[in-house]
Image (cartoon, rainbow, N blue to C red; front, top):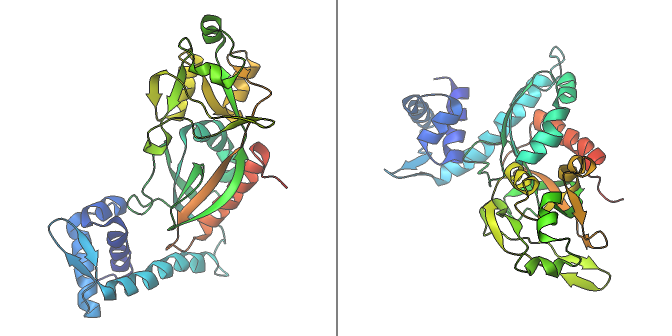
Length: 304
């Protein structure tokens, strides 16, 4: 038995909650993962997992062992990189998940500079607006707009996205230019509705002008949960959009979108990078987080 492989297999089974999911993320067969965990239990003479036909539960001894081993495996990588004879450059695969517009417009265009500094880090990136299961899907970190409410996540605020309300010129030619947010409730206006992280949709942010407040939605013909498709729908004239500046800037300059309600303000959307609390952040994750912080200082800086 390779004890390192066995420990790695055990950690993934605990995190994924099943041998099948663990095998998929480790690119191994389910039989191989099962055998490694069984050999580890035989070596330790301790039962680490309770198995049923539907799920896998960690035993009390297994929970203690998992906490120590998960941290040990992560720290081992840092130890190897830090050896005097090693290159000292973070390396290995980094699994991240980011909102699709953020990937297309901000992160991916900047990755050549990151790769030039850290050429031995390989990305496996999910670009979507869904809520990712970091543990079950073996994702190292996520970039997420809005508040992070899960207590088991460590979240670092990396930026604040300024928001505005926009519409395509074709839409405004048909529906007219609204002078007040409440006018979006009129029968001739439409919004494009965004479903936030699998929720029921709607726009969760209040607009303000002096002492006046407005929290409005409106009628829609399209509800969607992907940021790129949401933007495309607005450009096609399907309704009014609420967008971060970085998504709208180029289209406003080209005349494809018009900023509405210029004298109204919306509280900025916080942008966080988050990872699982029970995982020791590896060096490659730490340098990626620091790089994202520096990147967002250019695009959406935090207030002083």
